[in-house]
Every structure is written in structure tokens, then in C-alpha cells.
Length: 331
Ligand SMILES: *Cc1c(COP(=O)(O)O)cnc(C)c1O
Image 1 (tube, rainbow, N blue to C red):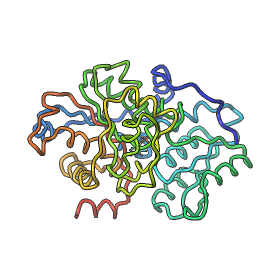
Image 2: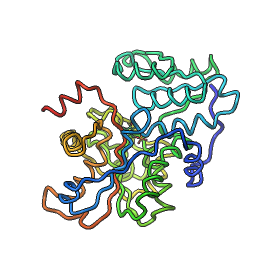
Image 3: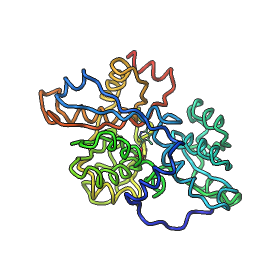
């Protein structure tokens, strides 16, 4: 398989370079406010709406930044990835924009809407049985046969630098944040954001938010090494990763203020808030950061942890099957 040569860890300069590559390609997503939530928490909240990003999630930033750096030879043979989620669509669209072939290895029982969207962006989809087959072995074989380059969903310096441009934009618009809450799966979004915050707002405390059943990163931070967990059950399907990566873990360990968790019930409550008060469709994984900020504020117990603070929230994605979404709202 063609992999990029071993790369150094990403830096703030890489985030800036990614922002230049993404100019005119990614949307500069809006930052929105809610008086109701500000009053409830006694704070000022700034929501960075990556649910309105191309392909419906921040993942387009990292995928495009990685593919834009392919050599001519890599471009000719194209890109391969394995993902059942937002990274697949992000790779498919980025490959189309850069005019290269893309192949996505997906479980045969993946959501029909995601498979369809990935195909509509022009990628070839190869399915496998997740109970009897190993997706990484399949991917390696196809990559070898076709000379394709693998771009993983989070543990890659170019992907991390691209994801960091969401926080970069937020800080350029709202420079003096006290806190920034970020959804956390494999840690690409969080570690890239940390690079931007360290330079632009070193006083800002960055908090990663995981589903409570998928708290591998919290365990890793406490243990001081990467902890791998069994495949977790949660409605936040974009954060079902089992472990942080070799690039994402050290950045998070060294620079994140903390990692907290929320329950599926708290996520559903956050989805309803977004729908009712902010008129926004947000997927469960995309609501992690806001649900985390609410839990952290302790407002349920009359707490005041965020009182008077300026708080950034990255709303990370909005891709959810409508029938599933309707059930969350109706329950
Ligand atoms: C992938 C994803 C995440 C988690 O991102 P990582 O970089 O894996 O931590 C969060 N929210 C959404 C909507 C995602 O698609």
C-alpha cells in the first residue's frame, strides 16, 4: 500500500496552511447565539455551526487538506478509506473536487443514506461483513492492488491540521473565549483545535466531550497512555472509536484542560434544544460539545461554573437519518 512517508506531528503553521488550502473550498460556517441558553447558564455561548459545513460535518476540512497534498502519482491512483460515517462523504467529495478516484470500504449494514451520499459524491463503495471480515485487511489488499493511498479518519497530521481550521475561524471571529467545548471520537477535531487555541487564545480552557459509554479518551488521559475499549454502544455513532491515535493522544494529553462525558439522554435533550430553540438539525455526535457544556456548568444543580464566561461550542455535524431523528425528537 502507498502510505505517505512518516510525517512529523502537526503544528499551528500547518493549521494556517490548511486554512489557505481550504479557502474557497470549505464554507466559513456561521457562529450563532441563543439568548435563552445564555440566560440559563449565565454565560455567553458561541456556537460554531459545522453541521452547515459541506457534506454536513467538519470532516470535509481534514479530508480536503490531506488530499490536496497528494503527489501527482498518488492523485492518479486515488484515495482509499474505511468509514461508515462522515469521513467517507468528506473523502468522496474532496476526491471529486480534486479529480481523483476514491474508494470507501463500508460495512454492508451501514446506513443506506450514508452509502448513497458517498456514491453520489462519486466514490466507489466496497462492502464487507463486519462480523466475519476485517476491514483493514480488505483495505490493505485493495490499496496494494490499485496503488491507492489510505487516508484514515483522524490519526493523520494533515487531517488533524485541517480539522483545526474550524477552531481557527471561531477564534478569529471571537478572540477572547474562556472555554471551548469539542466533540471527541478519535481526537482529530480536538487535537487540531488545540493547536489553534494554544497560539491564538492560550488562556482558553479546551474540554473534550465523549459519550459516557465510549470514554476511552478520558481513561487514557487518567492512565497516561492510550486505553483501548470494546466497541461501545451509544447514539453518538461518530464517536464510537475505541482508542485515540498516536498523533492525537500526545496533543490531547499535553494541552486539553479535561475530558468529560455525557449520556445518550443528555444528547437527546441537546438535539431537542437545537431543533426547538435554534432551528438546527444536529446529529447526536454533533451535540456532544453542547451537552457537555451544559453538564459542566452544573446548572441542573444550581451551579455556576460557567457564570460570566465566554464559551465556544463546536457543533460538529448534522447528518442523521430523518426517521431516526424524528424518534429522538418525539420520545
Ligand atoms: C468524526 C466526528 C466527530 C469526532 O471527531 P474525531 O476527530 O474523531 O474526534 C465528532 N462529531 C462528528 C459529527 C463527527 O463526524
